[in-house]
Image (cartoon, rainbow, N blue to C red; front, side, top):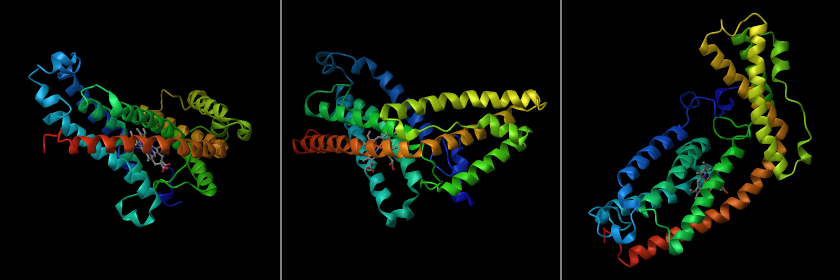
Length: 306
Ligand code: HEM
């Protein structure tokens, strides 16, 4: 299997998977925004009558230099989010980067937008744009849920679905790597990491989500079981250095995830289709509300740049 087809999971370090470290970048930028909000807390938390008399008002109000610049940033970021579905559908845009990388950046920007927009609005959400903001928060929550489902479909580095053969080969490769790193005999590794078959077809929406959570918890238990086998088989956990234990945990997690994902694949794909159908209309509603809001602000001249 060539490296482009190798499985990429949440555990694959961003450096080696050649992907954008979306979670970390979003966390750092969110921290910067939270700290900036804490500095302005006296202003943001004050009643409107006090706000308008504050020295910070010309800067931090939604039409002020800082407030509105953040609004423009949120607007640009919001429009940018729509480039992801365009890239996903247009093969001719492959030169601009893989779908996986685009999704990483989409998620980073998407995670930050509600915080940037709330700072722009100085944390007051009234009128039509208040409803638009609500739509955005719903899309945001839906995005987080979508990602939870998305990572359960085995994918290659390019963000494309893996073939069954590739998944099988990857699982064998991971199992042998665990044997080599841990020194536990192959049969014992396979037994410790075995995933019981279930009838995923009969699970409804709630049943499938419950199964996702159960699988996440079971994976942790199985990994603990594998590590205790390494102690029992003489390759004491104590003698394995911490780096090796970390490596085994990472490999085992990916190996079990693959089995769980393949077992649930059809049910996951069904839910993900359903998610797409629900996600898009709310995203479009939020987009229309945001465009209307910006148009009104520009037309009525409530901007610092015009
Ligand atoms: C806040 C505003 C957001 C908007 C307006 C937005 C919009 C969109 C749109 C229009 C799509 C494409 C749907 C399609 O292809 O049919 C999409 C896909 C997706 N978004 Fe977002 N999104 C937002 C935030 C987020 C966040 C915060 C996350 C994750 C934490 C996220 C994760 C995803 C995922 C996993 C997909 C599906 C990828 C795929 O099927 O290829 N989104 N989003």
